Amino acid sequence: MVAKDEQRSQRRRLLGYTGVALFSFMLISNVLVWGSGKQKGDKDMGYFAGDLRWFLRKRNKGPIEIKGKGLPAYGLTVVALNDPQYNDMMSDFFGDNPPELVKIAAPTSVFLINGSDKVIIAYDLTYDFRAADGTVNSNEYSSIFMPALIDWPRERLAEDQAAVILPGRARLISPMFSFGGLTKGQLPPSFGNESDEKRLKKEMMSAIKMTLEWTSSLTITLDGVFFEDGSFVGPDASEFFENTKATITARRDLLEWFVASVRKRERKGESPDIVFSELEAVVKEMPRPTSQGASADFYKNEKLGLAQEMLRMKDRIGAGNVILEKIRTLETKWPALRKLGY
Image (cartoon, rainbow, N blue to C red; front, side):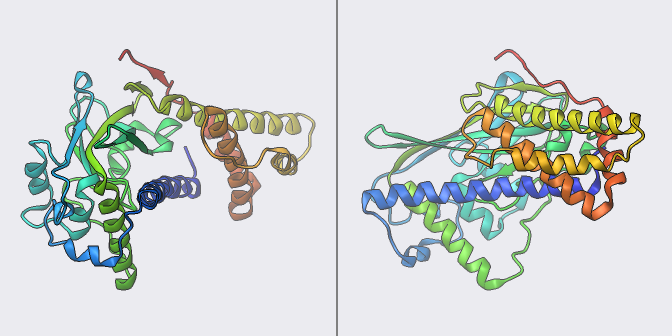
């Protein structure tokens, strides 16, 4: 099974994906607004009165239709702000007064309801912002619990409900959150610093309001989902399946090379620790990280990232422990990733 240090690393990466989504969402917002000459200052923050539709205050371009689109054939529902279930689910999750951060993110948040009989371990959402002239700008947000696609025991999936969605459960998701979403009974984590909290909330409100200023409708579509057994459903317009598969393949290819090199040294009566010198040489030859546009980019970046992580693990827990852990990981049966009919 994945070592505890690597589990933590992978979970940090999951939160990192969320942070990247927040950054890209705000970047797209600011670029679009600057391009149209509609940037505004902090005075917009005064519009927030604690309600879920705060962004409509002083808006002179009419209402915005914000709707979700799930995969009903597989029991997967996406509930957005204007969908009938949204208010009832918000009350069910948080009572009469949701946390302020949840209210701010409401225009971008959805409830993803898992009505299937399998655990969701990864999902991809597409945000399509349509302007009055018909122009559509899209943004993607995804979350992956990587250990579940490698060697995480299925019977332990319920232990990590911050990263998976159990059958019959739902999660409130937004690219504006700096965490993996909220299940019923959970509250947003504390910022720990009042000034940072105030600044981040202002940035979030500004990004949302500026983006929605030119938006006439927003459709949030569930583009793909991985279940616990490796099966995948969804239209996959963003190539989420291929990119995730490339990531997993990169990990397996590197582990197979690593374990084969260890066995080779052992057969020669040499110390298997020498393999880490070989790994360092391999890292030097690997291409540097690139923007992740195609599955080949995901493959290269993941392979390099894993190799570097293994070298850091050697320094923390010793070469022998890393070797044992990687052999166990490789010998575990990994879920076979496959697309179901859509």
